[in-house]
Image 1 (cartoon, rainbow, N blue to C red):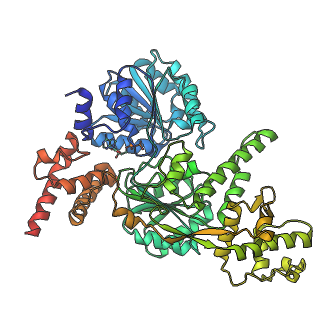
Image 2: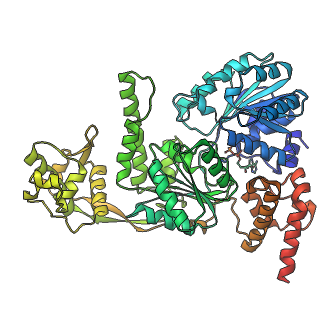
Image 3: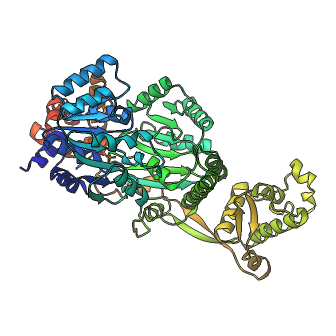
Length: 612
Ligand code: ADP
């Protein structure tokens, strides 16, 4: 057997490479630099780990986060590969020991934090040993255009240039924009890299946007429906994290929290609780980011809309890394756009000039519009995302809340006329435009002090829509904006009319709104499983999970490091009865088979004996 297949099977337990992997592995093995752009969960690690095990010398993997390194090294060690990490989490003694082992050639793969590359001790090590390849994980951190820019990544090129022999350079990222891709190749000084861009689709993810009347009860409901599964709830602010986490805990859901306002110690502890499934639900701001390599996350709920679609896809994409079906649900509400705008206008943009800052803000507002479009579209959500990333899509996927759900056209000409006329009258009365909040108050007969002070209650449109619930009124506003009858003036967020509004007010143009008649839910999606997802005996799967938990506890590693959910599903489907059959299960390599095989085979034996 070809050596690379032997390694793929014996170490990692897989029979075939996935899309893009083999080209990247072959190119690195032939001495070429490579740049792999593949979505989360596509299997980037294999692309550098397989060649690393075939090269003579050591492979250095630059990785941005401690938890990510720990996890990958734990997974490699479990598979029988000697690997180590070098970062600030090591004690002085552990660090010295790791360096000694590295000098003695004990490790094929060494993960290192970028800050460590240029330290004296690491430099003296790399000058002595043979380095075959330097792999850069999460390579988009090198780009100032990306959201995860890390200045320490800029040191990588210098590090490589100081090595006695230039190793092969391999860079990987899930970030899709061309600008970032070009930046990576340039900043790392890649030499004519073989570039592989695989599709960005994640067929096992179900996408949905919901507009609950109140978000807190909605998020509680969604998490309760998924009890026993691991998930992340992303919130825009620390206070929302506190509120949601508190409410989940009060309902008896084992949840923990993560945001920049917590001490380093608590953040590490909470992350660990999540990682080890002691608390399978994490409520976090986007500070809980890149380092999450937890493969069994089965839902990501956004309590608030993120600032742009890239962040959204990256965060949502943390679900279903193991290939199992998973849900990505965004709760969209009225305040989201203003919160995002606030965050954009208050973002720390370092030492930018006035002009640069204005350009950046404009760019960020444009990106926000794309994100808002996702929340409002009645078309295929997956199609919306993929098209944004430049990938053609038939615009129907059967795996999102919009596809399969049916929409009805509702005539809303009368309320539309009332709203437009109200905006016009308020402007005439005051001599200036006001925001949507004020117009809503006037239409719903609000008694707020400003409304009364400005005598807006004297207008003929005052209270004309007082029976209309606020969320429906908001939908009307959105529909008028999408239809090009109104627009929000960005500087003061005032609601204004376009010329087209005149057609509705004076020339009999009718306005219709698309309303979802029937929702497509994750459950209906499950009935049409994504390719590769097979239905299995749920009781057997539960028994296998229990065995996995026991083994994980005994070895003090997270459960998914023992075997991923995808591996357990395949095991439940194949029902292996011998070690030979056990080795046929996807994700079972030789070392893991000898370590865990007996325990799982015994579980399967007992399970079927009990059925007799
Ligand atoms: P990424 O870094 O691209 O997000 P990972 O390297 O963490 O993805 O891989 C995601 C999951 O896919 C892991 O559970 C991994 O074991 C699995 N995987 C990778 N390559 C293959 C393959 N060729 N066949 C089956 N599963 C694979």
